[in-house]
Image (cartoon, rainbow, N blue to C red; front, side):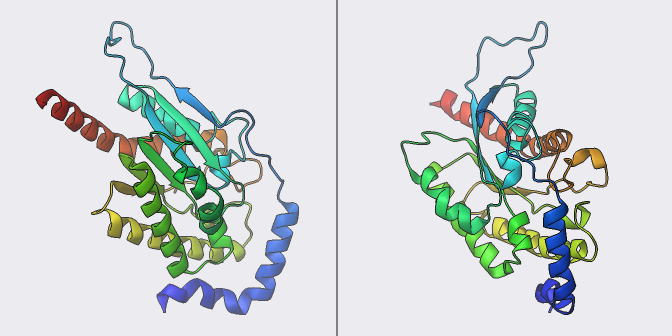
Length: 272
Protein backbone atom coordinates (compact mmCIF):
# COMPACT_ATOMS: atom_id res chain seq x y z
CA UNK A 1 0.00 0.00 0.00
CA UNK A 2 2.75 2.47 0.95
CA UNK A 3 4.51 1.90 -2.36
CA UNK A 4 1.49 3.26 -4.24
CA UNK A 5 0.80 6.09 -1.79
CA UNK A 6 1.61 8.96 -4.21
CA UNK A 7 -0.71 7.51 -6.84
CA UNK A 8 -3.51 6.88 -4.34
CA UNK A 9 -3.32 10.46 -3.06
CA UNK A 10 -3.02 11.93 -6.58
CA UNK A 11 -6.00 10.07 -8.05
CA UNK A 12 -8.85 12.02 -6.40
CA UNK A 13 -6.91 15.27 -6.90
CA UNK A 14 -6.03 14.56 -10.53
CA UNK A 15 -8.14 17.29 -12.22
CA UNK A 16 -6.79 19.96 -9.87
CA UNK A 17 -3.22 18.66 -10.14
CA UNK A 18 -3.40 18.80 -13.94
CA UNK A 19 -4.58 22.41 -13.79
CA UNK A 20 -1.84 23.31 -11.32
CA UNK A 21 0.76 21.58 -13.47
CA UNK A 22 -0.26 23.54 -16.55
CA UNK A 23 -0.32 26.82 -14.65
CA UNK A 24 3.10 26.11 -13.18
CA UNK A 25 4.59 25.38 -16.61
CA UNK A 26 3.07 28.55 -18.03
CA UNK A 27 4.10 30.78 -15.14
CA UNK A 28 7.59 29.42 -14.42
CA UNK A 29 10.38 31.31 -16.23
CA UNK A 30 12.15 29.23 -18.87
CA UNK A 31 15.82 29.42 -18.00
CA UNK A 32 18.44 28.47 -20.60
CA UNK A 33 21.19 25.90 -20.21
CA UNK A 34 24.62 27.09 -19.14
CA UNK A 35 26.82 28.75 -21.73
CA UNK A 36 30.32 27.71 -22.74
CA UNK A 37 32.08 24.39 -22.85
CA UNK A 38 30.71 21.59 -20.70
CA UNK A 39 34.19 20.57 -19.57
CA UNK A 40 37.13 22.02 -17.73
CA UNK A 41 39.78 21.47 -15.06
CA UNK A 42 39.45 22.50 -11.42
CA UNK A 43 42.80 23.27 -9.82
CA UNK A 44 43.49 22.86 -6.10
CA UNK A 45 44.62 25.93 -4.16
CA UNK A 46 48.36 26.22 -3.69
CA UNK A 47 49.25 27.12 -0.12
CA UNK A 48 52.46 29.00 0.59
CA UNK A 49 55.27 26.59 1.36
CA UNK A 50 53.11 23.53 0.68
CA UNK A 51 53.48 23.09 -3.08
CA UNK A 52 54.14 19.46 -3.88
CA UNK A 53 56.75 18.31 -6.39
CA UNK A 54 54.75 15.17 -7.15
CA UNK A 55 52.21 16.93 -9.41
CA UNK A 56 49.50 14.26 -9.11
CA UNK A 57 47.54 13.55 -12.31
CA UNK A 58 44.09 15.03 -12.67
CA UNK A 59 41.16 13.03 -11.37
CA UNK A 60 38.72 12.44 -14.24
CA UNK A 61 35.09 13.30 -13.39
CA UNK A 62 32.08 12.64 -15.63
CA UNK A 63 28.53 13.76 -14.80
CA UNK A 64 25.36 12.41 -16.36
CA UNK A 65 21.98 13.88 -15.56
CA UNK A 66 19.06 16.16 -16.17
CA UNK A 67 18.81 19.97 -16.14
CA UNK A 68 21.17 20.75 -13.21
CA UNK A 69 23.94 18.88 -15.06
CA UNK A 70 22.98 20.78 -18.22
CA UNK A 71 23.47 23.97 -16.20
CA UNK A 72 19.92 25.30 -16.19
CA UNK A 73 19.73 28.08 -13.60
CA UNK A 74 23.36 29.23 -13.79
CA UNK A 75 25.44 31.20 -16.28
CA UNK A 76 28.26 28.76 -17.04
CA UNK A 77 29.09 25.10 -16.49
CA UNK A 78 31.75 26.16 -13.99
CA UNK A 79 28.87 27.34 -11.78
CA UNK A 80 26.75 24.23 -12.42
CA UNK A 81 26.94 21.08 -10.35
CA UNK A 82 29.72 19.34 -12.31
CA UNK A 83 32.10 22.29 -12.14
CA UNK A 84 31.24 22.92 -8.50
CA UNK A 85 31.67 19.27 -7.53
CA UNK A 86 35.03 19.22 -9.31
CA UNK A 87 36.17 22.39 -7.55
CA UNK A 88 35.21 21.01 -4.14
CA UNK A 89 36.95 17.70 -4.87
CA UNK A 90 40.10 19.49 -6.02
CA UNK A 91 40.27 21.31 -2.69
CA UNK A 92 39.64 18.20 -0.58
CA UNK A 93 41.96 15.90 -2.55
CA UNK A 94 44.64 18.54 -3.25
CA UNK A 95 44.83 17.51 -6.89
CA UNK A 96 43.40 18.75 -10.19
CA UNK A 97 40.01 17.44 -11.27
CA UNK A 98 39.22 17.33 -14.98
CA UNK A 99 35.46 17.32 -15.48
CA UNK A 100 32.92 16.79 -18.24
CA UNK A 101 29.17 17.34 -18.02
CA UNK A 102 26.74 15.35 -20.16
CA UNK A 103 23.37 16.79 -19.19
CA UNK A 104 20.05 17.12 -20.97
CA UNK A 105 17.29 19.49 -19.95
CA UNK A 106 14.13 17.47 -19.36
CA UNK A 107 15.95 14.13 -19.39
CA UNK A 108 14.62 11.03 -17.68
CA UNK A 109 16.52 7.83 -17.01
CA UNK A 110 14.79 6.28 -20.01
CA UNK A 111 15.76 9.05 -22.42
CA UNK A 112 19.32 9.14 -21.08
CA UNK A 113 19.69 5.41 -21.67
CA UNK A 114 18.64 5.94 -25.28
CA UNK A 115 20.65 9.07 -26.07
CA UNK A 116 23.53 9.46 -23.61
CA UNK A 117 24.46 5.86 -22.88
CA UNK A 118 25.61 5.18 -26.48
CA UNK A 119 28.07 8.07 -26.11
CA UNK A 120 29.51 6.43 -23.01
CA UNK A 121 29.84 3.01 -24.57
CA UNK A 122 31.75 4.51 -27.50
CA UNK A 123 35.34 3.73 -26.53
CA UNK A 124 36.70 6.53 -28.71
CA UNK A 125 34.70 9.15 -26.79
CA UNK A 126 35.82 8.40 -23.22
CA UNK A 127 39.19 6.81 -22.59
CA UNK A 128 39.38 6.99 -18.81
CA UNK A 129 37.04 8.07 -16.02
CA UNK A 130 37.72 7.95 -12.28
CA UNK A 131 34.43 9.23 -10.87
CA UNK A 132 30.95 9.25 -12.41
CA UNK A 133 28.15 11.38 -10.98
CA UNK A 134 24.58 10.32 -11.80
CA UNK A 135 21.88 12.96 -11.17
CA UNK A 136 18.32 12.16 -12.25
CA UNK A 137 14.90 11.94 -10.66
CA UNK A 138 12.98 15.22 -11.02
CA UNK A 139 11.57 14.51 -14.47
CA UNK A 140 10.90 10.88 -13.60
CA UNK A 141 8.98 12.12 -10.56
CA UNK A 142 6.87 14.59 -12.50
CA UNK A 143 6.21 11.86 -15.10
CA UNK A 144 5.11 9.57 -12.23
CA UNK A 145 7.42 6.75 -13.25
CA UNK A 146 6.76 3.61 -11.27
CA UNK A 147 9.20 2.65 -8.55
CA UNK A 148 9.87 -0.66 -10.31
CA UNK A 149 10.62 0.94 -13.67
CA UNK A 150 12.82 3.66 -12.19
CA UNK A 151 14.82 1.13 -10.20
CA UNK A 152 15.25 -1.15 -13.21
CA UNK A 153 16.42 1.69 -15.44
CA UNK A 154 18.84 3.01 -12.83
CA UNK A 155 20.28 -0.47 -12.34
CA UNK A 156 20.69 -0.89 -16.10
CA UNK A 157 22.50 2.46 -16.38
CA UNK A 158 24.84 1.69 -13.49
CA UNK A 159 25.72 -1.76 -14.81
CA UNK A 160 26.51 -0.33 -18.25
CA UNK A 161 28.68 2.40 -16.76
CA UNK A 162 30.60 -0.11 -14.70
CA UNK A 163 31.02 -2.42 -17.68
CA UNK A 164 32.31 0.20 -20.11
CA UNK A 165 34.08 2.72 -17.87
CA UNK A 166 35.10 0.80 -14.72
CA UNK A 167 35.37 4.00 -12.65
CA UNK A 168 36.90 4.08 -9.21
CA UNK A 169 33.61 5.38 -7.83
CA UNK A 170 30.05 5.94 -9.08
CA UNK A 171 28.18 8.61 -7.13
CA UNK A 172 24.39 8.53 -7.41
CA UNK A 173 22.73 11.74 -6.28
CA UNK A 174 19.52 11.26 -4.37
CA UNK A 175 16.29 12.40 -6.01
CA UNK A 176 15.85 16.10 -5.17
CA UNK A 177 13.22 16.95 -2.53
CA UNK A 178 10.39 18.27 -4.70
CA UNK A 179 8.27 18.94 -1.62
CA UNK A 180 10.60 21.91 -0.98
CA UNK A 181 10.59 23.39 -4.51
CA UNK A 182 9.12 26.92 -4.18
CA UNK A 183 7.90 26.96 -7.81
CA UNK A 184 5.40 24.19 -7.09
CA UNK A 185 2.05 25.12 -5.51
CA UNK A 186 0.19 22.98 -3.03
CA UNK A 187 -1.09 20.28 -3.23
CA UNK A 188 1.00 19.59 -6.35
CA UNK A 189 4.18 20.11 -4.35
CA UNK A 190 3.10 17.63 -1.69
CA UNK A 191 2.14 14.91 -4.19
CA UNK A 192 5.29 15.30 -6.30
CA UNK A 193 7.32 15.35 -3.11
CA UNK A 194 5.89 11.98 -2.14
CA UNK A 195 6.72 10.61 -5.58
CA UNK A 196 10.27 11.95 -5.39
CA UNK A 197 10.73 10.34 -1.99
CA UNK A 198 9.47 7.04 -3.36
CA UNK A 199 11.94 7.14 -6.26
CA UNK A 200 14.71 8.15 -3.87
CA UNK A 201 13.95 5.04 -1.82
CA UNK A 202 14.22 3.01 -5.02
CA UNK A 203 17.58 4.68 -5.68
CA UNK A 204 18.82 3.75 -2.23
CA UNK A 205 17.72 0.15 -2.72
CA UNK A 206 19.43 -0.20 -6.11
CA UNK A 207 22.67 1.27 -4.79
CA UNK A 208 22.54 -1.05 -1.79
CA UNK A 209 21.93 -4.09 -4.00
CA UNK A 210 24.83 -3.22 -6.34
CA UNK A 211 27.33 -2.10 -3.71
CA UNK A 212 28.84 -5.58 -3.52
CA UNK A 213 29.36 -5.66 -7.30
CA UNK A 214 30.80 -2.21 -7.95
CA UNK A 215 32.11 0.90 -6.15
CA UNK A 216 28.88 2.88 -5.90
CA UNK A 217 27.42 5.21 -3.28
CA UNK A 218 24.32 7.39 -2.92
CA UNK A 219 24.49 10.95 -1.59
CA UNK A 220 21.29 12.90 -0.70
CA UNK A 221 20.60 16.02 -2.77
CA UNK A 222 20.25 19.45 -1.13
CA UNK A 223 17.82 18.61 1.61
CA UNK A 224 17.86 22.16 3.05
CA UNK A 225 16.12 24.08 0.28
CA UNK A 226 14.26 26.39 2.66
CA UNK A 227 16.95 29.04 1.99
CA UNK A 228 15.81 30.89 -1.16
CA UNK A 229 19.37 31.75 -2.24
CA UNK A 230 19.91 28.08 -3.04
CA UNK A 231 17.34 28.22 -5.85
CA UNK A 232 17.46 29.97 -9.22
CA UNK A 233 14.95 32.61 -10.30
CA UNK A 234 12.50 29.96 -11.49
CA UNK A 235 12.27 28.32 -8.07
CA UNK A 236 12.87 24.98 -9.72
CA UNK A 237 16.62 24.67 -10.34
CA UNK A 238 19.63 25.22 -8.07
CA UNK A 239 21.30 28.61 -8.26
CA UNK A 240 25.07 29.01 -8.45
CA UNK A 241 25.09 29.16 -4.63
CA UNK A 242 22.87 26.08 -4.47
CA UNK A 243 25.10 24.18 -6.89
CA UNK A 244 28.17 25.17 -4.89
CA UNK A 245 26.53 23.93 -1.68
CA UNK A 246 25.51 20.70 -3.41
CA UNK A 247 29.01 20.25 -4.81
CA UNK A 248 30.58 20.66 -1.38
CA UNK A 249 28.14 18.14 0.11
CA UNK A 250 29.01 15.62 -2.59
CA UNK A 251 32.73 16.16 -2.16
CA UNK A 252 32.54 15.84 1.62
CA UNK A 253 30.71 12.53 1.26
CA UNK A 254 32.92 10.88 -1.37
CA UNK A 255 36.40 12.37 -0.90
CA UNK A 256 37.32 9.99 1.96
CA UNK A 257 36.57 7.01 -0.28
CA UNK A 258 38.68 8.43 -3.08
CA UNK A 259 41.54 9.23 -0.72
CA UNK A 260 41.45 5.70 0.69
CA UNK A 261 41.44 4.12 -2.75
CA UNK A 262 44.20 6.42 -3.91
CA UNK A 263 46.43 5.50 -0.97
CA UNK A 264 45.67 1.81 -1.45
CA UNK A 265 46.66 2.06 -5.11
CA UNK A 266 49.88 3.91 -4.24
CA UNK A 267 50.77 1.29 -1.61
CA UNK A 268 50.17 -1.48 -4.13
CA UNK A 269 52.37 0.25 -6.71
CA UNK A 270 55.17 0.73 -4.19
CA UNK A 271 54.99 -2.92 -3.17
CA UNK A 272 55.32 -3.99 -6.79
